[in-house]
Amino acid sequence: MTVLFGTTVTLRPVTALDIPRLTEILAQPEVARWWPGYDAERTRREFLEAPDVTAFTVTVVGDLIGSAQYHEEPSDDYRHASIDVFLDPAWHGKRLGSDSVRALARHLLYERGHHRLAIDPPAANAKAIRAYRRVGFKPIGTARHYSRDGDGQWKDALLMDLLKQDLQ
Image (cartoon, rainbow, N blue to C red; front, side):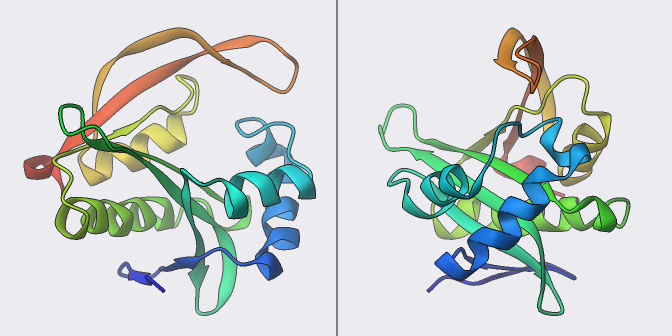
């Protein structure tokens, strides 16, 4: 079982017991705005059972406050990992998102052997973009009409990446 440590956060693999709490966090309006449509079944499917996603809980002193996950591109010619993270809004503004992303990035770069990481936050999610910039992610472009929001409207995403030498 891989457990990752940030300065304040601990990331551990998601278990079935975590699904109700993760679903509760995903249902909060400030999170659901960016992660729409999650019920317990979808949370279980995407955070516990998806064969191509490795999902962790984000905890602070034992309290489950969110999730961080990654997907790896296995092709040798395109090898990289894509990551995602969400936190309970009660924990926003404490730099725990950056701490979580940094812990996951170190794991992917130094233990999993990736040279590049990607993340694709909604272009309007300024808080997330600031957190990713703190870790060293750099904008590389905008993907127009990238995904649908909770109202079914298409939204743009800011494509960002981080090379090993960019990690802060």
